[in-house]
Length: 198
Ligand code: GDP
View 1 (tube, rainbow, N blue to C red):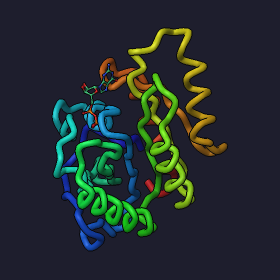
View 2: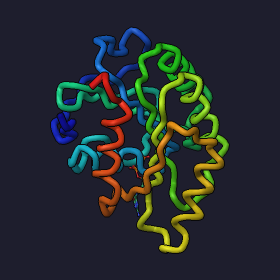
View 3: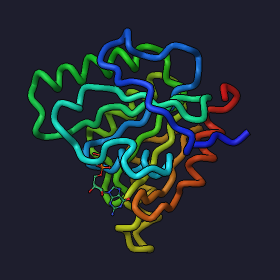
View 4: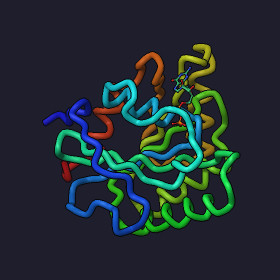
């Protein structure tokens, strides 16, 4: 049965481990550097303009926003990383929250958003390794595809795959939140990767 991403409800913002959802539904955890377009990708997936808030804002970087999709799975919007204007106290809060979520065993599938134009950053590589440590499969979304020339697409995708050390079971999807490229492919893939639990 297809997972209808446009049937989406906001459930809660988690700021500590007691807030995590533990009802057994699969959890698709979305991560990405601030400004990479994570909110835009989520909005495109759920077909809403302003569901996930676009634009980094200090103070929102240490909460995990949980949405339920089609009553059958969670889309977990992890706080963005690499935002320069964040205080040390807030970075520490971010670290503690992320560590407890990654240690919770709740992640079914990791979705990492990277910029299709650039080599993934050291922070992106760290994030990918956090996902690998959970043993869950990872789907990497190469966003802002609309900014690339056709001839740049294949070499850039190869560089992303290599820099992040993607494994056999992982997937890489070229995407443009702005134009909508990749939406159907990503939905089909997430559904397949979340697999039997759906
Ligand atoms: P977040 O901080 O990762 O949630 O990123 P946002 O969704 O707030 O997007 C950051 C900026 O990138 C905004 O100005 C978006 O309009 C822009 N953006 C997001 N996705 C795309 C895309 O696919 N193509 C282009 N050209 N711009 C995008």
